[in-house]
Image (spheres, rainbow, N blue to C red):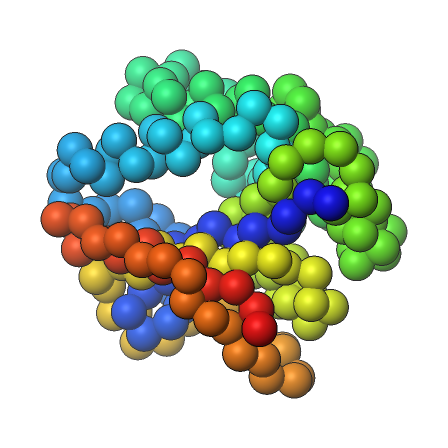
Amino acid sequence: MRRLTVFNNISLDGYFTDRRGDMTWAHKSKPDPEWDKFSAENAQSSEDGALLFGRKTYELMVAFWPTPAAAQQMPEVADGMNRLAKFVVSRSLDKVTWNNTTLIKGDLAAEVRKLKAGPGSSIVVMGSGTIVAQLAKERLIDQYTFVVTPNVLGAGRTLFDGLEVPFTLTRTSERTFRNGNVVVTYEPQ
């Protein structure tokens, strides 16, 4: 069975978007070659993995990663983003244009259960806070990896908005970087 993993940036005060819904603050860290290498390796790590996005995240991603600017600025990451299979969950989109992308409509939990039962390695959810909250509620997420950035936003949206029943996670790894980012991985108990 495929594992479903969340990989998201969060601020020190626990938000993944600021009060305007913006996530660009998470990508303004100090230059750090070790972080750049980690990002490139992370994007290239799975030949048969897949990405899962909600509509808003998909629209942000497709606006950048298939472009020549992305290939020039971050070639390894752009290659991984463009090469991997991608699934977009949306009620409003009728089509997707990014290569290797499949549109998912209908019951999110049921569709994700089908994806998890299918062939391949992990499926990674990036951004997509509404999707994360819904899948967390259904206990379909096998692992959460957070990049805790040295930013305090004061307000915004957490990844778990609307979660009605609390649950506990166990930390399985952590790694710090010179730019102030800390990557922490948790699994549900």
